[in-house]
Image (cartoon, rainbow, N blue to C red; front, side):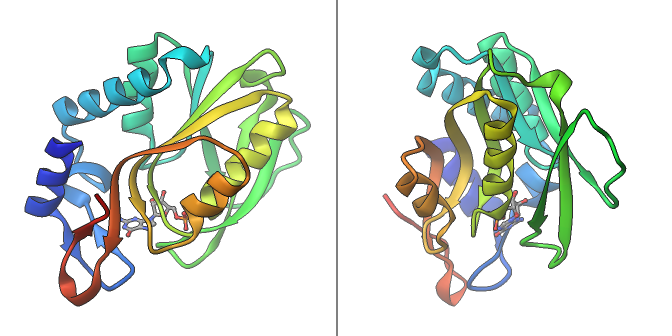
Length: 190
Ligand code: 5GP
């Protein structure tokens, strides 16, 4: 997505060889117009997949997942991050390491909002090692719903997350692929 690449070049801040700060458009401030365009793009990529719900993890995935759900005319469900796991018989939970915070968090999704009738599209902002995605994929599987695919705004190809998910036979589409952040420079994959 050329417009997104342009914005990343203009506003992205390379923090290290591993981390790109995108606070101006994804992780702190949200550009509604750009976000709705990204949502339309995901909706068109997965138009034939019979999606019944879009799912994400709070918080940075919510805006683009909302835009996607809006474009597809289906509900959005976001998994919550919980500090402690309260005994909730209705919740599906997974423990996932947080890439940017360096801590482990528990993500939770109520069975009420996902079931075996669902065809689910998982949308997220950035994929690094894939821990957040793997946690949510496990939750989707345990709900009995079918995961039709994963849509990621920014794929960092030099980290293993996207590759390992594709190797599981899951369709993963990203809007922008970054090959390297070395020497403070953003290099796109294609
Ligand atoms: P993963 O679980 O794939 O290792 O990391 C995914 C989550 O960590 C993303 O949802 C994103 O919020 C955060 N994250 C991973 N890498 C980056 C990065 O380079 N920059 C920012 N701002 N967040 C990142």
